[in-house]
Length: 193
Image (cartoon, rainbow, N blue to C red):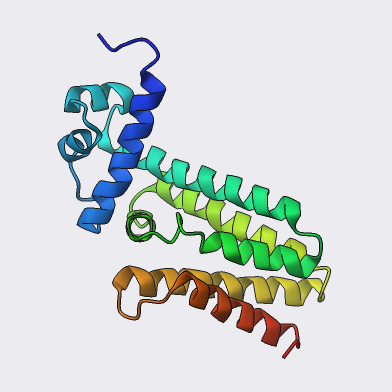
């Protein structure tokens, strides 16, 4: 019988272990046993808490999204101008926890899974809409609504593209360099160069 009060701790340990296992494998082809072993629990307990590997992977993705949302809310509180808001959204996208190798591997694996899983696709749509909304909200104070939407799309594409490059390790780039590239793009789009 599970110990009383341990469920939240073990669920978090399993989500963290899933993230690490996905990062180590570079795909979602991890087993519940591997994840459970990484978390220091039995596979039966992992199944008890999540029901299936798919549900554990969905919860791992939700956890990443919750963390990204919390990080964005925190930095956006301190941004005073629309341009500072843009910079805050960009900086959060490349936060060290979001740009860690295992997190990047997990995001890329989730994008692949979204081709087959409606729930994964829905969660990625939530992420994309939230990013777009945060960018457009700041941009609308600087340019027309149409231009704001266009610049937001380009900015989101750059962010996703830099994640792919980092994930493939084809052209590894630092957090600072990633932020600088996206900032340069926005400055050009805003005519600030």
